[in-house]
Length: 542
Image (tube, rainbow, N blue to C red; front, side, top):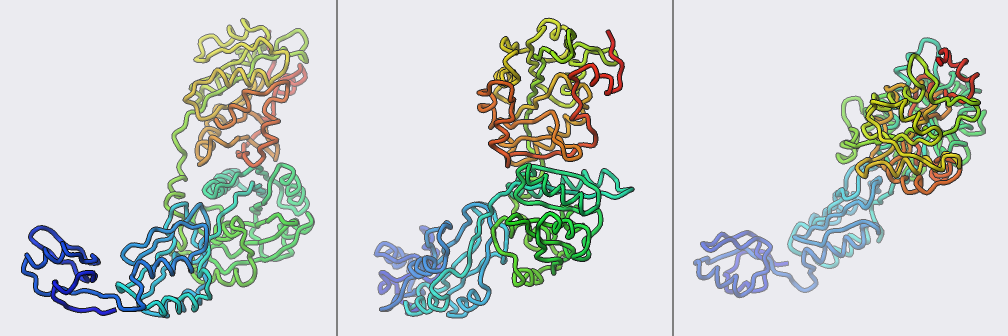
């Protein structure tokens, strides 16, 4: 390339190196000068301009950038058209960016006119984020220089993009005497927040004693609930392969791959496998939402990257996270931490004939001066449900009377004897189009508290994909009621029949479950028989 000053009348086809400001406007640098540009320059009295001219064998900046990008960028990513010698590379989906440090360095040493810059190694990026930029500095480069750069890079991409593949997770927490329940609740919330940011569901959450046998049993139960990865947060940090949590993994048939990370916070992390299922022993710092080594491991697992000794050793570079938030979450993901503005409707199933209670309609039995069904309805309204549909069937008029004065809508299921599924469908049809989900509760569960309803609405609303998720309360490893269904399931629920309720829909979508830990067994306490009522404590009133 020839570069330097020249008279305008000799520069047709040359590239203007520096912008020129004229009375009738500017001619930008990088402009390929044509006759009209030259006429403007001469008319303005400009005697000398600085230009670049291609010589035989030269590639202009955009052609050079395109050729390099084609050779050095992995397939499946989005590249901008070359402009001013630059090609930007963007992520397609959420994933990790990785590069070969030595080959990237060698590429940037071939010629000062070639630069390729990437985000950090193992950086987590969102769809559309820029992950690399290729820039040709001069207006052209000799073609042999471009070919030398491709050869130096080995003729293959120097960085890679690894999409994250979501998995359904289970969380097992252990407790010891004197441990505050609030700590366990907070840990579950933080863990769910992490998983939701990565597009993963927490489908099972359990609290067990800090004993190997109990943890091993919980691992098995979690797998049966659809978990494809297990997180274990122990009451005490893992300090040895013979400690409680590693021994539990062994007892469950798993193997320990690694204990300890060169990342702080996050040193005391355990990586293990049960078959092909990842099992991660969480460090104590994972109870906090702040970045730690657990986040790095979680992302690598979801990206399908083997976490071998080299990978772990590489974490030492930038692994001191106490003061510097290295490899932060993408901005778009951080913004998802706050629950979105959603409207949850409610369906109270109150159509059953109470056959197991004999001649008495259990929903009308009074507890503390109010019919049982009224307790259930008030809990939903007081907990934040604004559009509550009560589905009636057996003794329709009496149930309506029992709820007099409450802000509810009634929907009658004439075919209530055919089973619960029909009542669910009737309730779904009765909800307004504006709701994002439906909390479906049973009219014979009077001990559900408004606080649980509020918590379920808040927790479900914090999910980035709440319309395609199903939220359950869980106590001592058992799921209970009510159940919050995202709007994406309304069509399926509306087409149910028989007495299965939503169980068939749920069985087809195990990874959609969002597990919400609760502190008592009210979520399991329904009233079917007179004995149930006696065991529940209150005296029935006639």
